[in-house]
Length: 122
Image (cartoon, rainbow, N blue to C red):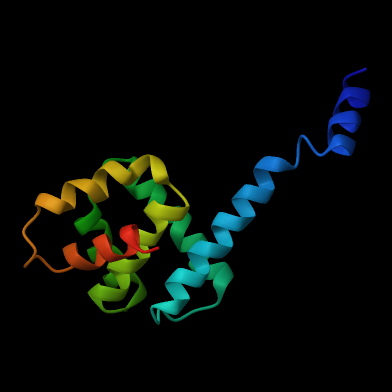
């Protein structure tokens, strides 16, 4: 019985709506990050985005996360900041509060401006 219900929902397209939205956000994330010059294949960049979201959800702040990304990926802090901001925008919008807090942050701290750029990009 459950299999018939699932099959019917799949046929109606009701179970595929969320993955389609996720695919769109994943592509948008990878395109934004690659567009800012962050090197790497899109599947690795996408995986990094989910690692970033996990760090943010474990209460690591955005600037510390950007610093870790910069060190671990050997990329400049501005690229790491864009990667964090884009992850917030496209993969973990529940963490947008962290990017909004940066509006009041010290703009001289490395990564602050770039996290805001990635989160605010249109």
